[in-house]
Image (cartoon, rainbow, N blue to C red; front, side):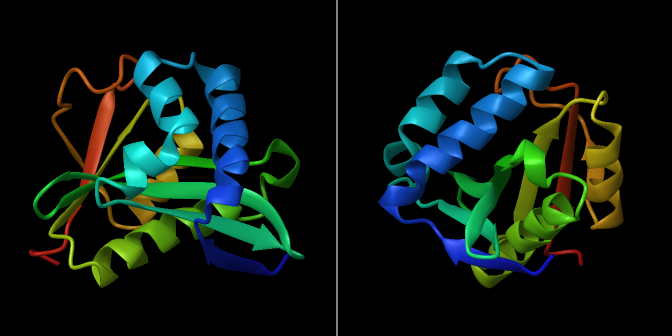
Length: 155
């Protein structure tokens, strides 16, 4: 499977919402903040200084990841999801690495993510790609029981 990255365009918004809602509904629930971000990606991610990327295979969009601006120098790797039919072929790791690479290009000092320990495969990928566990900042997502970061200043 040959994977390629494309940048967000408004016509891609339905994929961003579809993949992420399906993933959240499969493992958790769609929280109010998720719903707002997924239904309003331009306002929630793009206009606040973030970015959204998609992965394609054979010119078909199969996954997405976002970098959400949190504060100066800090972004969240968020809303990473792969279409169910395309899972298990490396697209998730490819998306995660894409998010890390794009954060570096943006000059981000720290990249954080929120997750849940039930997602063992994802946590394994995060660690493999350089994320380390930090104390969870409460309030962002109810489902989050682990928070991780890459501190680019110290790397």
